[in-house]
Image (tube, rainbow, N blue to C red; front, side, top):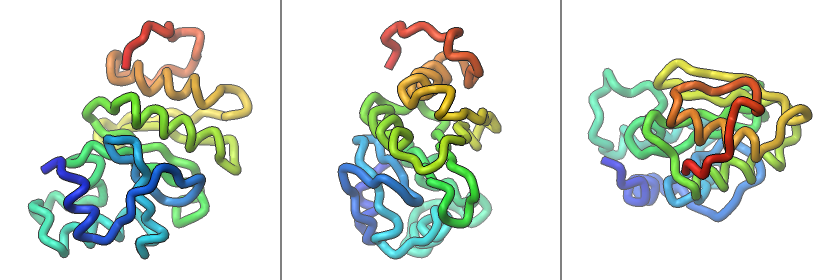
Length: 164
């Protein structure tokens, strides 16, 4: 069920190399699913379109996280849409270095410094201030989250040990 290319194509979602803002998904190859340009105002609107177009999921499982849960995509929002905060919502399965590169790039260009990083599927969230921590350090925290299961508050706790 991880064939995001097929399903995003069915729903006419354009995959691009970079989007500086908006509600987007970062797919496993590191590209950005341009929801706004594709006519979806929210992540939930895309979920409904996936379901309506035959994505194989029971209606009871439809909780607006299909690309995160089943396609290993990262959901990001710049806080300018229905959510009033910047959110990076991670899949339960480990993200790869291409996705980490894209997350870092997205965070480096945000209009606001406060970002919530988490994994809704595991009920784990941590708020960071980009005036106090770099996008690269948040990248390290995300990478280590998949090893430790924790989003650390202090960057000094982390070692740059080459875990991808």
